[in-house]
Length: 164
Image (cartoon, rainbow, N blue to C red; front, side):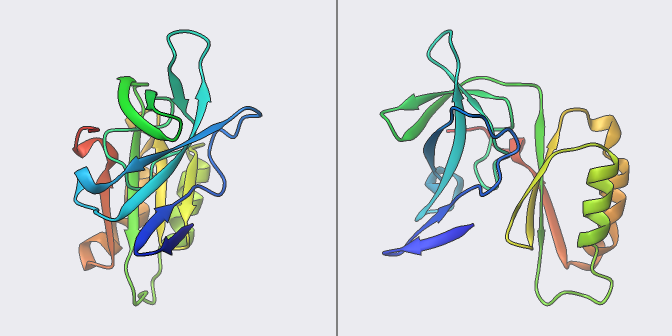
C-alpha cells in the first residue's frame, strides 16, 4: 500500500511474508536509491543476540535488503545499517499500464505458488518475490518473459545496489 502525505510517499507492507506475533516497524529512507520523497516501512523481528532485527517482509523498493537479513535500527523508527545477509534475494516485477490482452499476472502468481515461494504485492502491479534458491526460479521467469520482451513488465533484483 502507498499513501502520500504532504508530498512524501510512504510504502507499507499489508501482509508481510513472515508476520510474527512480536514485530517492530522501521522506515527506510529511499532517497539514497534515487527515490527522494519516499519511505518504505519494513517489518522487523527483534533478535535476542547482538541487538539486531530480522527483516520479516520482502522489500518493494529498498535496495540491498531481502527477507531474513539482519539490520540495526537507528533510533526508534529507522533502519540504520545492514548487519548480515540471509543468503536470500528478492526479485521485483512491475507491470506497466495499459495492461496487454495477454496479462501475465495470474500466470506469475501460479508460478510463484507452484515453486513454493513467498511473495508480497503492492497493489496489483508491483510484486516482490522471495528467492531462497535461484534454481527454482525458471518457471517464474518464464511466466513474465513475454511481457518483459514487450515492455509491459519490468524486473530487477533488490541486491542490484547495496543498502545505504
